[in-house]
Image 1 (spheres, rainbow over the protein chains, first blue to last red):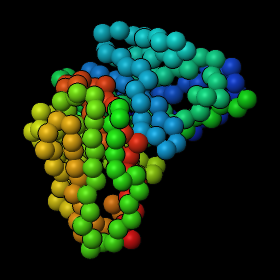
Image 2 (cartoon, rainbow over the protein chains, first blue to last red):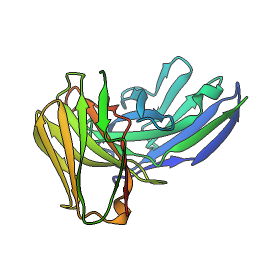
Image 3 (spheres, one colour):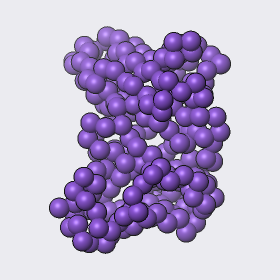
Image 4 (cartoon, rainbow over the protein chains, first blue to last red):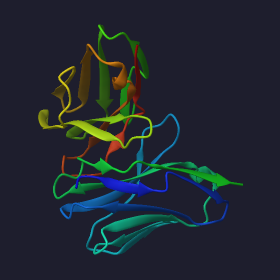
Length: 113
Length: 113
């Protein structure tokens, strides 16, 4: 029940295309859902986050879609660029325990020029 | 220096050695974390400190011993490790424990022979 399942494990997208990464969770006590981006040799960095009171959040080319009833959320990267090539992690945490994140397995995104 | 700094970046140790990982944050945060990142596995929360007090030990074996002397410094003392402990150890900080915006260091790559 503590798991966050992420798919796909790897993704290849052409430049200018849309990258979509999906995550699912079981624990209904989760109320904070961030996405982190990690480049090789670097630590993960927060990209965008959402709480269950909204169904969508957009920041630039990055959008989180959230489906509370299905217990699923996804990251959409519009107009994907080669510089977006990185590993993306979804995560979840419980109320007032924001930093105690449960991470998904990660998706290695490669954007081809 | 800015952000979260981890030393050493790489460490090779035998199973009978004792070594320590160091983390320092220059962000004025009050919460600090150790996460473990193994190949093909999700990031795994190990320990959480909030205002120098340990608030989470995620069933971590006693061969890993954390220390948080103040809100800016975090150590992970290692002794009698096993080869399966080889991984990237990531330190992170956040404003408070409830705040899920984690700032990660670049990690310490540990190899246990």
